[in-house]
Length: 318
Length: 318
Image (tube, rainbow over all chains, first blue to last red; front, top):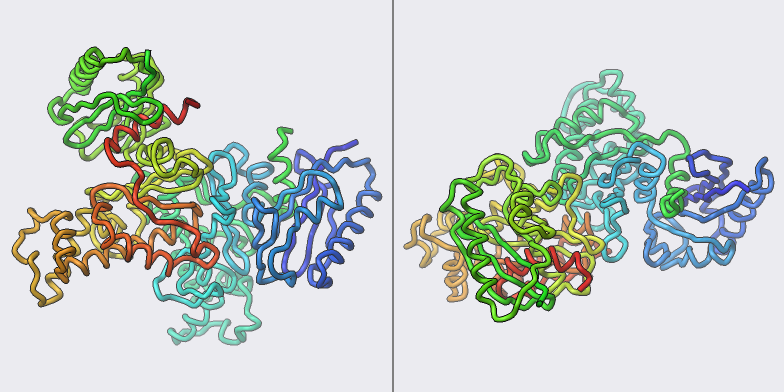
């Protein structure tokens, strides 16, 4: 029997799952729609049916030693999903209990950024690090912080909301109801907002003038920047400066060894990383200067599933 | 033999020491000048001579089970004091090694804010808390952060520099060489700077108009505020708003159960605490609102020595 951990990543649109061995090898993956079932039990029914089919089809006999789940608004302590704006299951969903009823193994849940941090520690570029941070750059900005080798959950399980640190007082409106949160500037959505701000301010030509807001993507902006489009380039510089500023402030709290940038926006590469590093170094307090690396994630494929499975492999000494 | 921990607090002017039993009872205290000896060995000679005299004079026979030291710029990991601006011993001072040569017991060193946090946990109001923060408000602003029951030292031992988080971009000049650090607004010195800013801005009468900058103290400002002086009152409101803003941002990183305000400025009481709490609650992300207490330290006397000794009593299960 091959020991594996089951990793489940619940996104707003799709749920991806996979079985991961202790070396981070993925034995199978699959996915179902997250949106199809209004009733959480119907959703879990389909999910575990699919998982069991994959397990049955596997060449090797597999022993699931535990299940790790990454989900929005997940609380590690209570094992619940709490009022997730992007999921249709409202209120407090006791997911860990519901999953344990279907498969009686250890089950852990946390948000996707914390799972990404654990993935980096167990399978990625942070294997030898006990104090580091992962910033996930997607539609929003998430953060997973590892301190003394463990994810920093804080008193209530909701630590690591760096995306909601205020970077500009009375700045951009945020979905959280406040103004000036980091993720209104640094995220795929933030990049779009910056493009439109700059198009309004400048008279320069830009290929982005032909794209309506609703169709613009951060990837299009990155591609335009790499083709030399000035507005797109300035957008990335502006985004990076905001991120560098806040990261320098977070370092004064947690003093990590490295900061990993993860997710779609991080794939923009040098046009993002270089100005982030520049602003970050410049803004750091002297005692931290030159000590902290800002780097891409060391995980290439199946990152979300690996991160979720790492919640289990981190608990077992392998 | 009564088991005690020796606590030593090294301040810029004086060094205070004392023996603390496991209940936090202080068996004796004493102090020497920190500034008198340019050679660290001469300083330690006098310090341990005094300590031995006190031990010899004690009514009970004492067994020192360990030594905890609070000092500026102290690194917990390396056991050194690194380039402390307010001490005359320059460069890297291997204090833990030097002390161990004089008394062969476990010796730990950390900065005064981390020691205050441990004091709060072992002897103060945070006995049942595993995630909290202590803000020390003196000449500067220090912070000691406890996560999962332990002080957050970070990768290099220098975590918890909340006083150097930037609260106003391009704001007030800070001793660290940057601008807009929290401690340039929120500290005894910050309060003085705010008084002068407000005296320049307003035409209102104020008793503070008669005091030169060099003679003004935060205590005088607090007293004037309590007598109804409008400039003094506005100074505290302004100071508190800055602190509340940054604390709300720090919560998004560490999610503590409580924040303790400690030190001279915290003694100002309601004129500081009320507006801090107000701004803090207002600025918090919704998931944290109403969950985190801002409160005064639970330690009344010998706080610095108790904090240093707590580094030892925290290690022993008592």
